[in-house]
Image (cartoon, rainbow, N blue to C red; front, top):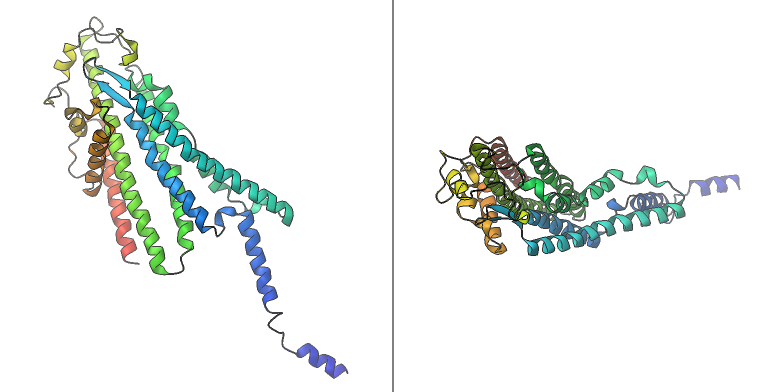
Length: 349
């Protein structure tokens, strides 16, 4: 009997017993996926959220098209139709971020209680921080509430700070698109499928950077024109100019008393670099797209400018001596080169 019992102990385990260890491992993976919902195998939701992220990044540059130059009164005003469109679209995309965060947190907290496991060790808090930074309403606050700072002549530091904030806004949002694309690529078992995802990711970044650079080109063109007005104000002195914002809502309280002197100091058609060099923004100022409320016209012109210079690595840009302008051109050149190197690297895989 003892031998029989020993033989029974030596009998190989059946197929029904082997998967128990594997089932245990799968249960652990399920637990990890529940507590770490960003890593869960949710292909449909990943696609939906990725699409909302892409739309959100595409909408942000629309805020840069809100300012318009009134060439007759030499002041800056808002395109109110553009304000409404940009705010509504941005609010809709922000709602998708909020829903994503709340749904994932609720699911993780609920399942962690059932499984009696802590959420703090498994939950990807860095992903959550990225999502929270992505929904900060920085463009809305800066463009709409600090409009006088954009057109003002008193605070150059404030204008530089606004530039920095507008650029930094894209870092967490673009990083979120990268994370979502990376999650989507994991759902493809074949190398060709992953390459298609990477190729789509690269194409999206090429288009979106062209869109962003074109919008900033339009926005900075208004900066440069108002900068020329500020120089004219300093040149003519306090008798002809009182320092203040070039805001059309001020009515008759315009800083320059004689507007014809602005045309002499800031010639546009054609521009005179010897008097004031608008640099790479002379095309937008001379073509008067900064004076138009026709959004399709100024958008397509700006978008084409961004794609063209991104493709040529900014080699055709003829800049002035302005530091911010040169940094902007350097950024275009570097990002164009990085996108090209990224494409070559993917083709060699």
